[in-house]
Amino acid sequence: MPSSETSGSNRTLERVAAILDAVDPAAVSASELARRTGLSVSTAHRLALSMVEYGFLRRTESGDFRLGHRFVRTAMESSAMPVLEQLRETTGETTQLWVRRGQERICTLSFDSHHELRVAVPPGARLPLPAGSSGRLLAEESEALGEAAAQGWVESVGLRTPGQGSVSAPVFLHDRMIAAVCLAMPLTRVKVSPGADFGAEVAEAARRVGEELQQRQV
Image 1: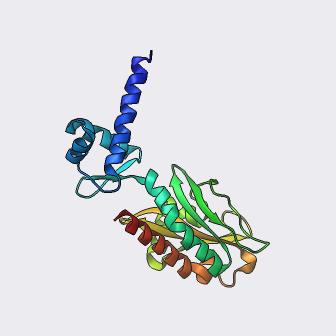
Image 2: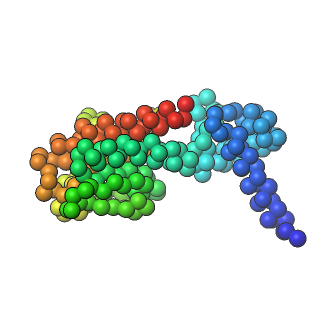
Image 3: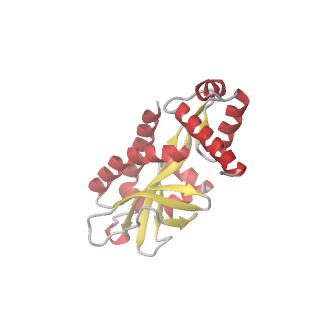
């Protein structure tokens, strides 16, 4: 016989699954969640708020509930893949997508340069903040945010790894930075600086990722 603790956990999981089904694909209010799931309004609201804390849901400005960053991340990767691949082909250098998790940044996508000498970081790699141009952005360093606001990008010249450079731009969703697009290269191929050479292209790529992601959520 299942224990009462197991039964309670199963009931909670069933309710969480029901709420996730109810908010896919549109944003809904707590009362609508209750109607769709058969839960009381208070129970639906309490569970939804807990799911917001863990990133399963997020709240809109009107207080309704939508799928959170744990699901947006998959949509973001889908949105970013063709953009990053095109950026790699246009610039010839390695492109990456980074997100923040605690005091680290995680590479969720990477398209390596075709050059024999290249910067290669596999998806899933973790690096401490604020090292590197993406790290400075995702750590929300005031200087990095100021640079990004002024010119659209932030660069790193041998700061994390000697002989390597990068330029990164923030990806925004609903005016909140959720990721950073990064272009990384050996400094031997840099003409002026990573930002001067490729900053405009990287900023445009980051803008396109955010725009495509927002369209997917409409």
